[in-house]
Length: 412
Ligand code: V47
Image (cartoon, rainbow, N blue to C red; front, side, top):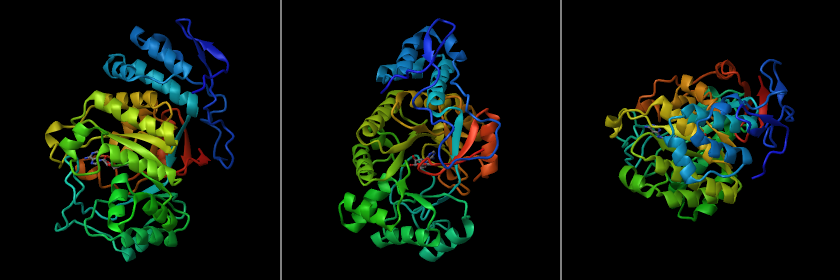
């Protein structure tokens, strides 16, 4: 990593910090339409005020962050353990402002869950159906074409396509699904299939994963979502999602995807039985993959929702834990371009606060969401682009509509 070499500001305790950084996107990205002048970030500088009051134990970490040095797992342990949550947030905020300026991005997207039938019984999941329930659904191609034609709009940029692991769908189904979407709306970016789905699709195809990923790409797959990573820990895998793709194979699969020229996201499902060490090891594995491939766009800490799952007794983790986990993710994942506060899972108000705890994206319009709502989410199913922009603006950030691959489309 490079050390910023720009103008410096002196903190109240005498430390010099860079004011701007080579990571800043800057105000002049080509193709970005400026809708209005207020909230613009031309003269924006990362906030340093709060950093002067850091607790002493965080100061060595602050120095590493300012120097662009990678944090160790021990640093991460301290970030999780310190009572100075405000300090952790201020450091993460400094990093995200240094990289992204005052901008917070969002997308105009919609989810499409082609099936909720799933062969696996993950303990954290309320979405799966066995197949014989009244609300078990598997979309046929007429249904998909109809939905894409009539319930997606011309302005929509992305369809997020994921489903359960249906034991009987043949390989052709997945190719048809992609082709049907592309035929109906060629401009729609298909962000589809987790690493778990891709592995199962390859099994159905009877072909090696690299070949299948290229064929899916030919059929219209544009990128992959970050789901299915859960917690990259053998212990948690054994306890909660035994039988499903193990952590090391998730990592191998994502490398195949990146090698095929597809970008992806990475998630971490937290707030259940995992320890803070397991969270940190998860982050460390993701950043090592990123060092190797550079293929991740975002890291998305997902707040576990327990209702209607076998883990219901655990209850939901706290807002403070969510904020801290987002902030620690930002600080640990030094090579991750973006960190998302997924408003559906973290909650609208908490997502707004998270924009000052290291997050620089809040996902999108979504419109129809089942995975979290089946597990008790109380957030709306979707939000309009106007509402998302307003929520971002309320936090003092400049809302920017982006596409999946981070082309900035409209700066509000
Ligand atoms: O893989 C399952 C998680 C993931 C629950 O890449 C649960 O842009 C909370 O990955 N409570 C799917 N979480 C969602 C996902 C995602 C969402 C939005 C954007 C992107 C992206 C990816 O949701 C699953 C699993 O880790 N999950 N059950 C639950 N009860």
